[in-house]
Image 1 (cartoon, rainbow, N blue to C red):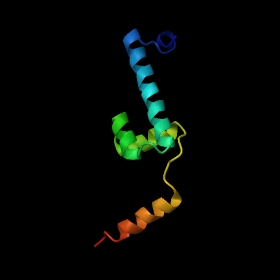
Image 2 (cartoon, helix red, strand yellow; image 1 turned 45 degrees about the vertical axis):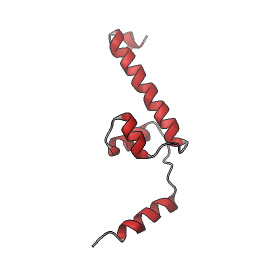
Image 3 (spheres, rainbow, N blue to C red; image 1 turned 60 degrees about the vertical axis):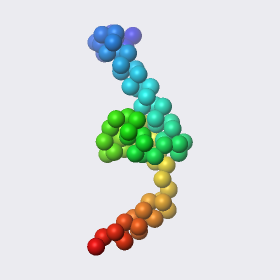
Image 4 (tube, rainbow, N blue to C red; image 1 turned 90 degrees about the horizontal axis):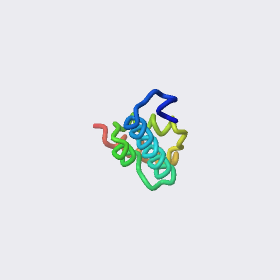
Length: 81
């Protein structure tokens, strides 16, 4: 079916479905807090920024709280010289 809808040969259709499955699996693990964004990016073989965009495209909420974000920001302020 995918072959005909997207004009793909069998191996291309299989690769696309495998990639989609991996993306969904990683998105579920990330949303459940079982992976960090860096781990998700690594599994997806994407740069960090692209992984954030891809997970956003899949409508996966981040698993970092606002308090954790603020703590990281405050900690980074101490690194500026």
